[in-house]
Length: 226
Image 1 (spheres, helix red, strand yellow):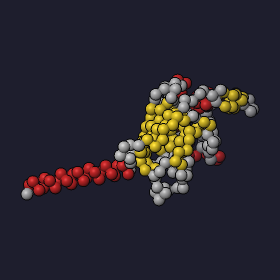
Image 2 (tube, rainbow, N blue to C red; image 1 turned 90 degrees about the vertical axis):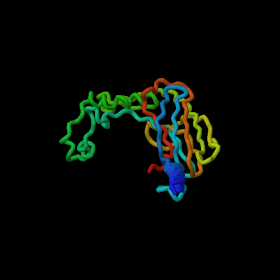
Image 3 (cartoon, rainbow, N blue to C red; image 1 turned 135 degrees about the vertical axis):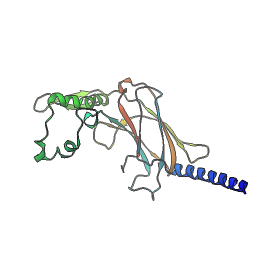
Image 4 (cartoon, rainbow, N blue to C red; image 1 turned 45 degrees about the vertical axis):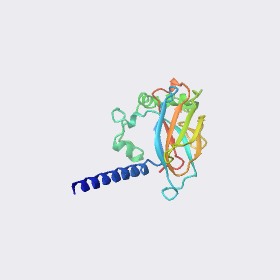
């Protein structure tokens, strides 16, 4: 009797473990997802396991191909709780209401320069023309040359395939984004992926020390954000 109970317990444990494995596999994060990638040094890698949903699972209509993009995120002290410029609840939510604006102290020019310091740094890295506040009526226009952004070696592996088949393996050039307005997005590619579970590995192909300590994200499937 004891042996029967023991065997039943072992079988139940195995089934439970398998069930959890299946459950976990089906619960990988679905697109859109993002991961940090350090562009400053050749060979730096970032990887993530994700799920491409079926049409029935998707909340919003998405294209048949998945977008791969880079987003460069400047440090903004107004969203850092440890910064003296951190925006509390009231300023964050009510400053833009004209009748309430008078109750909030305006930043001085020196404070604004400090707040926007990293925005300017990242803009300089990405290149292009920008207008800065120099105290004049229209500001001062400056053209910054872009720092070359390393190509990204992108590998996508099917986790549903018993042999972990590589379904995509290309070195992608970082391009100007074709759709998103603004300076902080770059475009890699649109890739057709069937619904399923995948491992995405991105590798930096050359050194770019200028991007050290710059927050860069590889955004996957951001065509329609949830």
